Length: 164
Image (tube, rainbow, N blue to C red):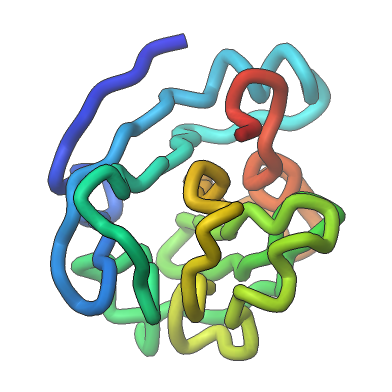
Protein backbone atom coordinates (compact mmCIF):
# COMPACT_ATOMS: atom_id res chain seq x y z
CA UNK A 1 0.00 0.00 0.00
CA UNK A 2 1.45 3.33 -1.12
CA UNK A 3 1.33 6.24 1.36
CA UNK A 4 2.72 9.77 1.25
CA UNK A 5 2.39 13.01 3.21
CA UNK A 6 1.10 16.18 1.50
CA UNK A 7 -0.56 19.55 2.13
CA UNK A 8 -2.71 19.24 -1.00
CA UNK A 9 -3.88 16.25 -3.05
CA UNK A 10 -4.08 16.87 -6.79
CA UNK A 11 -6.56 14.69 -8.68
CA UNK A 12 -8.02 14.56 -12.19
CA UNK A 13 -11.10 16.51 -11.03
CA UNK A 14 -9.49 19.06 -8.68
CA UNK A 15 -7.37 19.63 -5.60
CA UNK A 16 -8.27 18.49 -2.08
CA UNK A 17 -6.88 19.43 1.34
CA UNK A 18 -7.78 19.23 5.03
CA UNK A 19 -8.42 22.10 7.43
CA UNK A 20 -8.65 22.06 11.22
CA UNK A 21 -10.57 25.13 12.43
CA UNK A 22 -10.06 26.78 9.04
CA UNK A 23 -6.27 26.27 8.91
CA UNK A 24 -4.70 23.92 6.37
CA UNK A 25 -2.91 20.94 7.89
CA UNK A 26 -0.83 18.22 6.29
CA UNK A 27 -2.19 14.72 5.88
CA UNK A 28 -1.20 11.21 4.90
CA UNK A 29 -2.64 9.91 1.64
CA UNK A 30 -3.22 6.17 1.37
CA UNK A 31 -3.59 5.00 -2.22
CA UNK A 32 -6.54 2.69 -1.70
CA UNK A 33 -7.21 1.26 -5.15
CA UNK A 34 -5.46 -2.08 -4.51
CA UNK A 35 -7.12 -2.48 -1.11
CA UNK A 36 -10.55 -1.83 -2.65
CA UNK A 37 -9.91 -4.29 -5.49
CA UNK A 38 -8.97 -6.97 -2.95
CA UNK A 39 -12.06 -6.49 -0.77
CA UNK A 40 -14.59 -5.61 -3.48
CA UNK A 41 -13.55 -7.05 -6.85
CA UNK A 42 -17.03 -6.62 -8.41
CA UNK A 43 -16.77 -2.81 -8.51
CA UNK A 44 -14.13 -0.55 -10.08
CA UNK A 45 -13.20 3.13 -9.68
CA UNK A 46 -10.66 5.34 -11.44
CA UNK A 47 -9.12 6.68 -8.23
CA UNK A 48 -9.53 6.00 -4.52
CA UNK A 49 -7.71 7.72 -1.67
CA UNK A 50 -7.88 7.71 2.11
CA UNK A 51 -6.83 11.00 3.72
CA UNK A 52 -5.59 10.81 7.30
CA UNK A 53 -5.05 14.23 8.91
CA UNK A 54 -1.76 14.83 10.72
CA UNK A 55 -3.09 16.00 14.09
CA UNK A 56 0.30 15.85 15.84
CA UNK A 57 0.28 19.66 16.26
CA UNK A 58 -3.47 19.92 16.86
CA UNK A 59 -4.56 19.38 20.46
CA UNK A 60 -8.28 19.82 19.74
CA UNK A 61 -10.53 21.22 17.02
CA UNK A 62 -14.07 22.54 16.52
CA UNK A 63 -14.15 21.51 12.86
CA UNK A 64 -12.08 19.14 10.75
CA UNK A 65 -12.96 19.48 7.08
CA UNK A 66 -11.86 18.15 3.74
CA UNK A 67 -11.94 21.03 1.26
CA UNK A 68 -11.47 21.23 -2.49
CA UNK A 69 -11.09 23.51 -5.47
CA UNK A 70 -14.43 22.17 -6.79
CA UNK A 71 -17.61 24.23 -6.77
CA UNK A 72 -20.13 21.66 -5.49
CA UNK A 73 -23.06 23.79 -6.67
CA UNK A 74 -22.01 22.85 -10.22
CA UNK A 75 -22.26 19.13 -9.42
CA UNK A 76 -25.49 17.13 -9.29
CA UNK A 77 -26.15 15.26 -6.07
CA UNK A 78 -26.38 11.52 -6.79
CA UNK A 79 -27.05 10.15 -3.33
CA UNK A 80 -26.10 10.06 0.31
CA UNK A 81 -23.72 7.13 0.91
CA UNK A 82 -23.19 5.32 4.18
CA UNK A 83 -22.81 2.11 6.09
CA UNK A 84 -21.63 1.25 9.57
CA UNK A 85 -18.13 2.70 8.99
CA UNK A 86 -18.64 5.73 6.72
CA UNK A 87 -21.03 8.57 5.92
CA UNK A 88 -20.88 10.90 2.93
CA UNK A 89 -22.22 12.05 -0.41
CA UNK A 90 -21.79 11.29 -4.10
CA UNK A 91 -21.98 13.84 -6.97
CA UNK A 92 -21.90 13.77 -10.80
CA UNK A 93 -20.99 16.21 -13.57
CA UNK A 94 -20.00 15.86 -17.23
CA UNK A 95 -19.62 12.08 -17.16
CA UNK A 96 -17.59 11.94 -13.92
CA UNK A 97 -18.83 10.91 -10.49
CA UNK A 98 -17.07 11.20 -7.16
CA UNK A 99 -17.81 10.78 -3.50
CA UNK A 100 -16.41 11.92 -0.18
CA UNK A 101 -17.02 10.27 3.18
CA UNK A 102 -15.85 10.42 6.77
CA UNK A 103 -15.00 7.45 8.97
CA UNK A 104 -17.69 6.88 11.62
CA UNK A 105 -16.49 3.71 13.39
CA UNK A 106 -19.76 1.79 13.61
CA UNK A 107 -21.63 4.46 15.52
CA UNK A 108 -18.95 5.71 17.95
CA UNK A 109 -18.16 8.78 15.84
CA UNK A 110 -21.65 9.48 14.44
CA UNK A 111 -22.33 12.22 16.98
CA UNK A 112 -19.13 14.04 15.91
CA UNK A 113 -20.04 14.19 12.20
CA UNK A 114 -22.09 16.63 10.12
CA UNK A 115 -23.26 14.96 6.92
CA UNK A 116 -26.53 16.87 6.67
CA UNK A 117 -26.11 18.58 3.29
CA UNK A 118 -24.87 17.70 -0.18
CA UNK A 119 -23.72 21.34 -0.56
CA UNK A 120 -20.57 20.58 1.47
CA UNK A 121 -18.36 17.61 2.22
CA UNK A 122 -19.16 15.72 5.42
CA UNK A 123 -16.97 16.84 8.32
CA UNK A 124 -16.15 16.36 11.98
CA UNK A 125 -17.79 19.01 14.18
CA UNK A 126 -15.43 18.67 17.14
CA UNK A 127 -12.63 16.53 18.49
CA UNK A 128 -12.59 14.04 21.29
CA UNK A 129 -9.24 12.96 22.66
CA UNK A 130 -10.13 9.26 22.59
CA UNK A 131 -10.71 9.43 18.81
CA UNK A 132 -7.71 11.56 17.75
CA UNK A 133 -6.22 8.64 15.79
CA UNK A 134 -9.50 7.70 14.11
CA UNK A 135 -10.38 10.78 12.05
CA UNK A 136 -10.09 10.19 8.31
CA UNK A 137 -11.74 10.90 4.96
CA UNK A 138 -12.22 8.81 1.82
CA UNK A 139 -12.40 9.98 -1.79
CA UNK A 140 -13.43 7.92 -4.82
CA UNK A 141 -13.63 9.02 -8.46
CA UNK A 142 -15.09 7.16 -11.44
CA UNK A 143 -16.46 7.66 -14.93
CA UNK A 144 -20.21 8.01 -14.47
CA UNK A 145 -22.29 4.94 -15.43
CA UNK A 146 -25.66 5.51 -13.72
CA UNK A 147 -27.16 6.63 -10.43
CA UNK A 148 -27.64 2.95 -9.57
CA UNK A 149 -23.92 2.10 -9.93
CA UNK A 150 -22.66 1.38 -6.40
CA UNK A 151 -18.93 1.50 -7.21
CA UNK A 152 -18.23 4.91 -5.64
CA UNK A 153 -20.47 4.16 -2.66
CA UNK A 154 -18.60 0.94 -1.84
CA UNK A 155 -15.20 2.50 -2.60
CA UNK A 156 -15.77 5.09 0.13
CA UNK A 157 -15.68 2.36 2.79
CA UNK A 158 -12.53 1.71 4.84
CA UNK A 159 -10.85 -1.69 4.50
CA UNK A 160 -8.21 -3.64 6.43
CA UNK A 161 -5.16 -1.50 7.18
CA UNK A 162 -7.06 1.71 6.26
CA UNK A 163 -9.02 1.36 9.51
CA UNK A 164 -7.69 3.07 12.63
